[in-house]
Image (cartoon, rainbow, N blue to C red; front, top):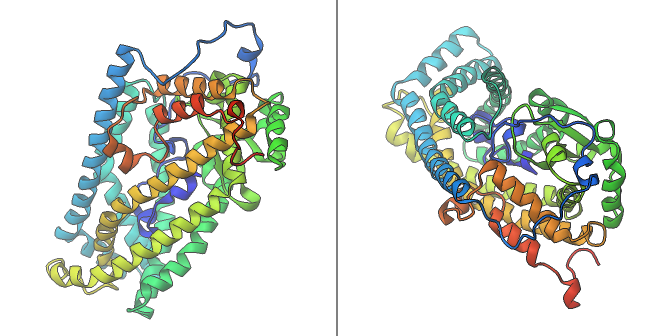
Length: 449
């Protein structure tokens, strides 16, 4: 699902500092151990019966750390937003954008070459100016032992991200300004139409082209062959056969201690990814609950629903941009030496406005995402019933471990949840898992009959 969060605005996608795949759960790369091809070993050995979970809790020391980390994270997100606006304003006010435009136009007379020269200079300038925020975020993750990624590896991911940003950003900038010159009144609509298939294309090729740049992927059957038949029990129960060729192991343990699983791509590129940290740290039952959740995204059509929601929000954002850009440039454009909306140097102004609109759109998108994720949790409970013993406790134990690993705040600030959480809180999810039991009360189930 997370690849659909490229952003809620095509321009923000193009020139924002994208997160590497391993950080998409808003955790950041980390891990302490590398999983072996024996994922369920711990569950097959004699173990003491784990204590029954009734709610997500942390020890007093863990809770203190989790609250501190949450406060730092919330403050950093807010500061980063306003700092990002200040960076764009600085680029405009200092006329750096005009210098970049002049260099691009002197270097080549071809518009597409100018687009890539200009966006490369702009993207790298934004990246350098925002680097202190990025480094601070990584330092916090290392401080709380969530990230174990080496700085050379982190730097490599940063540079790869800039390369992707330049390629996508240059392409979209060239298309945007071509459409603006062709249709000054309807550019927002035509650019919206053009953007949707392009974004779908990026989503489609990402598992083949983008994701492997940041993490190592191998067929799950080769890394954890004993898991495949267990997972297929879930797929058969769901009435959706997911072939082993679409089940992948991802090495996250060189970057993060966090556990995760995800659905990437769509159509022929759609696959289910299980991190090696998940395999190493969870029992088979817990891992099957994770898999059931990802199956829910398959079965309930969440990728397409998410894309349609994205398309609607992008339509609104582009229309708002069209309605406000004229007056914005009329007020400030002359002081920034901008020739008009079709000037390359106007791109930071466009990004600035879209960043403001996108902040509100992100909150709406996260609200919708939390709804889809809650549906997938419910689906997981129903599809695993009768396959995973005490499936609610298995899922609750999985999230208890996750919360302890990443120091997830049991009582997060509601404003932070509304603005930035794309999943329900860990506390809410554990509460659902330990209370949802329609079978004992002869109540109908919602998805699996």
